Image: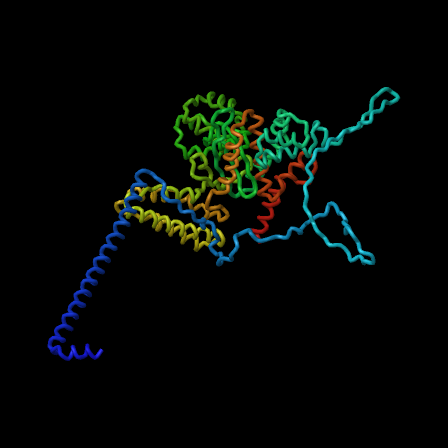
Length: 552
């Protein structure tokens, strides 16, 4: 240490100062170099971010041009959440735990003693342990019908109980077969295999007959369900889907609301077919005042007007007789026949007691545009979703409109809960303001907005009928039954099979909507008792209760 100090003493002060300045200069140069390098790094990071964003935009444009699907955004839909709902509770809706002992009926009691009871032990009561079990076994019954011969030589024989007079298969077995096929969607071969495993001697042909034939009682009740459902309804929802029959393309139409569902299959899904379905496939052709009003909107030629007379008379009850009537008037044009037939069928529909202000909610298909037609908002929004958006600005415009649309949709939801005249006026004005927009250089979006404006009355039908749903999801759910069956069982082969499928599936859906057990319903109908009341009576009771609740 002393040696270092001696050396420093020998160095002149000027040299020490110059050396320190040199070192400080080196430090400053290194700091400047570090600063410049940091600036370069930040600039390069910015360029990388810009290039990444540009690559993302180009990929989106490429997917849009090639109609490729992007990464799915799987988010829970919140469109139908109540606008007045509070915060999250931590539990999903409908997940509240219920007691298994509620309504627990004890069918059998077994007392179990301990394997060893010590001497002097005192009895202290029973511990209850409940178990639910199912007995599923064959039960062959042999009825011995006593036979007597009277003095006069006549024979007197004991009669089978009423539920067992329909054949050699009991009512519970018949109900079970119907339940497995129409409720659980079990195909006929699997039903046969299952019954064989249980020791039931039955053929595949007999199973088919049980499922399809002698269903007159069910068909009559289903027709009554449709008639009463339409008479009591302020609105119905409808949809259709493919339903092949005998290897040929066909269609199935569903009509219903919160209380009933009615299915009918045919070869067409035209407006004429829909009107026939509304009459339960038992058409009446009536050229009354309602038919005349319909024709006035269809542009019928004047020469055909001159041949028609309008009254409440039923002109025909089948298609061939109706065609003969038109031919007798000299009406042969395809378009004129179609329009007048639709008018006559509509007249027959309204003559059956259906209210003329009935709202019909659909996905926008033209055949359903009758009476007071309402349009599903979810289907209408798809026109926006289908827009590709070739530029970033276009995609931003589309996203903006979608966001504004669903905000308006939630306002309509709130209106349904508490309708007022002021809210109605605000929503009508808000519709014009929302869909009256015009985007420069985005012609496709402007076309979609014009479509919304053109269908304003159908989209805002809820303002006059707050109980009308804003979407057609209920009928979509109903008709999905046929999509599932189409995948499982393919097509129907006989007309009896097709009619039985339409009827039993419709009754199943109606029971579910009315809160009734379809299994108990089948048992009641096959046994011929009144454990389950007629479904039309239940619908009338619900309609009456709703009217009382609305009045109060």
